[in-house]
Image 1 (cartoon, one colour):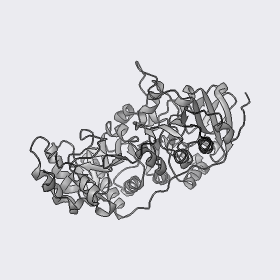
Image 2: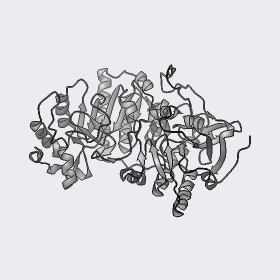
Image 3: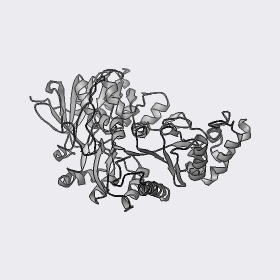
Image 4: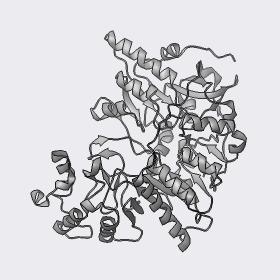
Length: 497
């Protein structure tokens, strides 16, 4: 079958007002770039004529500015799920312009199959190769591509020359069945493969192919600083101690790590610690630090949903594919983040918190309980099922005006029942087997910044005693003082009683 070649603008013209689009990718890696940017231009033109034009968007995770940013700036998104990192999109969500549904990333594909999120009319999928019989070879991510390719009424392919065809063979694509009687996933080690290296689509559904040469819109992270380096070292020291005690098997366990500069610092510290043997990753994203550790022999294998790396790092992978081919695999998000597999393999999860309270509850999504930051991502997929679940964060933010350790989190994403360890640059709070009041004492003593320790101890003094002590009238006092005065250190508990 010969596919119709078209421009990005022509492909965008096929999309109608009110449609739900399913997009490939997971982070900007593997996300479409040309058609969504052209769609934003088309939407702006229609709005200028007084016409209504908005679409719903469902993705694997975040995308690049040519999607979330461009469409948000042109008021073209009515509904979006499940995760994003774009500043303009975030502003639109927090001002109520976009209906945003924050979903655990492992659940998106199943919710689509079950009809919870509406019907995907058009799938836009980035590929490095496409065959006449409908085989789609993906680029740098798995995401929800197998599911949207099957469910969508039509498929638009962005055939991207910026991604090497040497990527062919790196994916392990498998779509889970709908319940009941779903078969277990036969994955017992990160390197196990269970699926195909391509998506088999109905060629008749592929309505257009847009040829592009666009690199991923990779995000650059801040360079390490003394605080992130100290957090990373604290994590490495904690895991090395558990390994020495025999709590972690001598062969070590697979690791999951979130995105960002703290995650890079943690992995760097683990790589430098020679008491920790070479290990494996079963994770949702792989960053530059992981690739470096694979090259150094410190990481033996990496299973991921996305190569969330800089473009020069990605090109290095392509140029050295003979080396990386048996050391990396890319999966759909429902497999990379599958709680069943995480529990089976004993994955150690490491994610970042916005704030944690003195009892171990974690907020990873909302600033002061109201303003969405990015979303829960895959942190919940891993935290609940992890062998050891770790959350990291600096002890303060905004130049010390905000304490990341508070009496009660202003929004809860991960409960004390799932959070095992909290680590800041101040130290480590091992919460395993601790009662609520024991947790409060160790979190305040080991993780809170010195500027806030006494304030948190004083909160406990005014709290009603119980199995978990709280003063409900003062529980969000530090947050309120920040909103009113711009500095949590100005809190006076008497004003809340």
